[in-house]
Length: 57
Image (tube, rainbow, N blue to C red; front, side):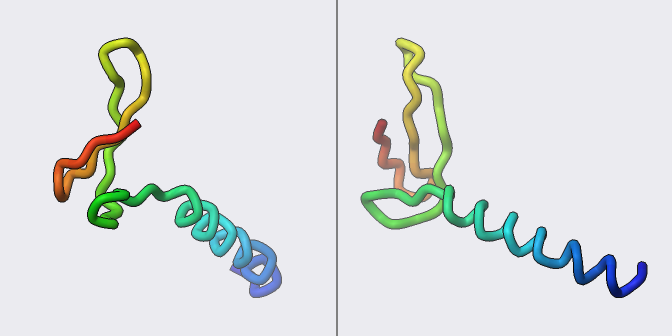
């Protein structure tokens, strides 16, 4: 690929990485980033930490 094209698209991968890390959740109990989003019984959204088992909504 020509270097001028690589220079143009190089910033796009950096922007995607920043957006991904900015929206990543962490467990309020243990600080782990291993968090799953789950649906509650009444249709609400909750989160559960797959490291320590803490759940919250």
